[in-house]
Structure formats: structure tokens, C-alpha cells
Image (cartoon, rainbow, N blue to C red; front, side, top):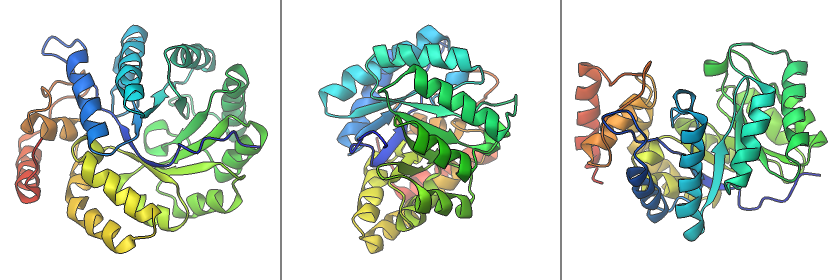
Amino acid sequence: MTMKTDWMRGCATALVTPFRGDGSVDDECFRRLVERQIKGGVKILVPCGTTGESVTMSEIERIGVIRSAVAVGHKRGAKVIAGTGGNNTAAVIEFTRKAREAGADAALIVAPYYNKPTQEGLFAHFGEIAKSVKGFPIMLYNVPGRTASNISSDTTIRLAEKYENIVATKEASGNLSQVMDIISRRPKGFAVFSGDDATAVPYIALGCDGLVSVVANELPKESSKMVEHALNGSFHFARKIHYKILPMMEANFIESSPAPCKFVMKEMGLLGENLRLPLVPVTGPTRELLLKIIENLKIRA
């Protein structure tokens, strides 16, 4: 039976990590961004995911960011799902334990990248982690475009049925048939989140429970309202917001994320446009397009 996690529903933001000009984590800025998310209606914070450039950060930095998200978020009633994934099972177990000790409410664990495990390898990987952090909720993260492996619907259901603390999946495969198969066969209480902004409304119409969002970094109020309307069945209002902010959703991935998002946030006065290599700032044509979208949407901080 799946652990009870009623709070795992709605709009979650895959938070960017602000860096200073010297490359260090800007903790003060990060805390302001978390406050802005909560004021915008976001109730689930996801630090140290792909959007947070976690693979370029040290373990000490990642724990520091998670602690800051917890410190600000918990005071305001928000939950924290910490990104703890990697492609070394033992290391993921160790870091997931540290994230739990830092106060995170759950872990987001991406499929192992580069080593391309089989379905049995994926099942063993996530199963070993689940057994090692009993009682701590885990959200699977399936994003084949970045990992070169797909967590199949059969493997997702096997994990959900065998391990009570594997409570959700973030589906960014873009495979509608796979998502529907998971929704139709999942055990009671197992949550399915869209991992792409543009698929949130249609996926919720099919039974998904929420969205882990990139565009919410720029537009938390609009993103949280869009998801809220969809979950309430008010699809007329959800669609209206969806189509309004769709250009920004799509533009955020014209170049490697989170570079476009950070450019927009810089233009909004929210952070410095600093990324860690191998990511670099967006090119001239992308800047021009993003500036037009900012102007059309009348975006302000």
C-alpha cells in the first residue's frame, strides 16, 4: 500500500539555483526566490533538480540549498521535495539520507544517466534506495531525453506496488500512452505529475495530480492557478492561462535549461544571469525572442 502523502498534489516548482558572479551559490537570493514562489501560490518546492543545475554543485552546496528551501518553506507551510538522484546507487542512498536529515519532506530521484540500466537494473536501483530510506517518500523522475533510459510503465507500477514509500512519479517522457498506462494501473495513493509545463493541463485531464514546473520560476502565480483550475475541473480557465503562457513554456527550452529561464529572471531583476559550465548564457537570437515574450506578457517581478 502506498504511503499517504495527500500534500503531493498541485504545482511544484523545479527551483533554479542563483549563483553570484564568482560562481558561488547566492543563498540570500535563493531564499528570496522561495518566498516569491510561496507568495505566488506554489506549495511544493523542488530544489536541486535539473533546473537547479545540481550536477554542477558539490554535495555541501546541494545540502545547503535544500536546508534553505526547508527553512523558508516550512515556515510558510510549503513542502520540499529534494533532488537527490544520480547514477551511483550507493551515493544516491547516502545523499537521500542526508536530504532527509536536512528536513526535506520527500526526494525526487531521476533515473540513472549515462550507464543506461535495463528495466531490471532500474527496478533494483530504485528498490535499493526505497529500502534504505524506509518511511521517506520518493518521487521517481523519468526524463529519457536527459538520461538515455526510460522507466517503463511496467517498472513504475512494479515499484509502486512493492515499495510503499515510492509514492509518485514525475513523467517527462512525452509518451502519452505510457502516462495513461501508469494512471490506469497505479495503486491507490500513487501520484503522477507532469514533468513538462506544456503537458500539464492535458495530463491532469487524464488523471494526473500535478506539475513539476520550470515556468513557475518566472510565473509562479499563473502556473499555480493554471494547475489549480485544471485539478478543480475548471478547464476553461486552465486553458486560458495555458495558452497565454505557452510561448514562455516553449521558449524556456529553446536552449539548454535553465539558461533561458535565468535570462528572463535576470530581466525581471530577480537574479544574476550566472550559470555553471558547461551551461552558458543564451545567444543573441534567443535573447531577442525572450524579450518579445516578456513584453507581450507584460512580465514583472
